[in-house]
Length: 103
Image (cartoon, rainbow, N blue to C red; front, side, top):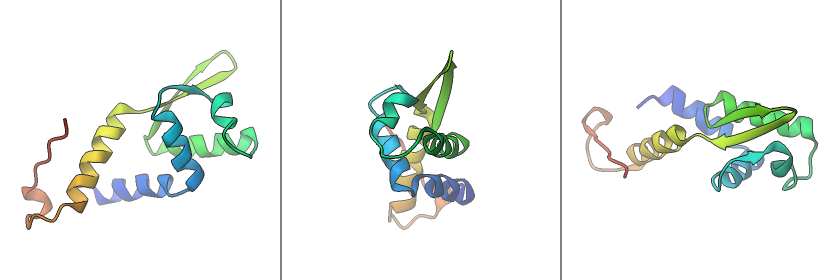
């Protein structure tokens, strides 16, 4: 398990607004303007949060004209879920002996 990488992801997710953004994106791709409707802050603040999530590898962004579309990265979801299972399992094995299969 990559503890440094996991801690960086958890740090990016630790903000309640970012958790809500992740929750919104779990339903599919959204334009930044659609995400912004769920919050009481400005577009520059949303950009700050989205950059943190993008830097952590949690979301990807596609720019179409003046609009930014955000998607929760499928590889992130799979890897994160597997990491959390490994981290929280108590099977008496160390990390090197654990093998987790997520279907």
